[in-house]
Length: 189
Image: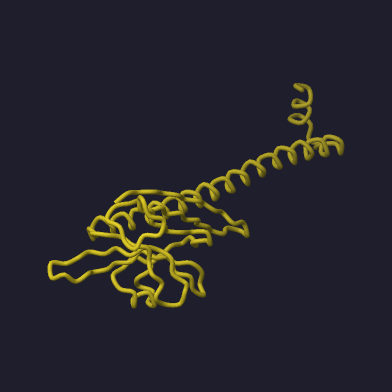
């Protein structure tokens, strides 16, 4: 090897064809390896970024639901009675006021032309406007549900204590690949 280096340094004739082909072959193998490592790194970075986005949005959804429940302080919770067009699923929080009237808030999944949306709010008429929906970069996928489970009754009218089972499937698309995250959370009230 030392003789080869001396000859290149001292001799100004350049490289022979065999030496040129050998050096180009070695360089192409090294560059191919470097390219593969860099490409793998970028793909792994994007995958981890999307997974983190999905986890962050699922945490945001769950904290919004829990905050609404505990800030509102409902006396009872019932499965939402679909009064509109058959495209709502969720729960209704009911608080009995001092004057005997009921105040209601909704935690609903709404199916519309744009897919599935999460709605958390005070009036059912607000379901039409975009301002009442959570803005997410991810899509809520079919299979997302919000269910109410009350002890001792399979189909309760309304119950003062029980379990809320939230199942969400979130998805994002990056470079034609669908990335999904399934979330299931149960909490009592």
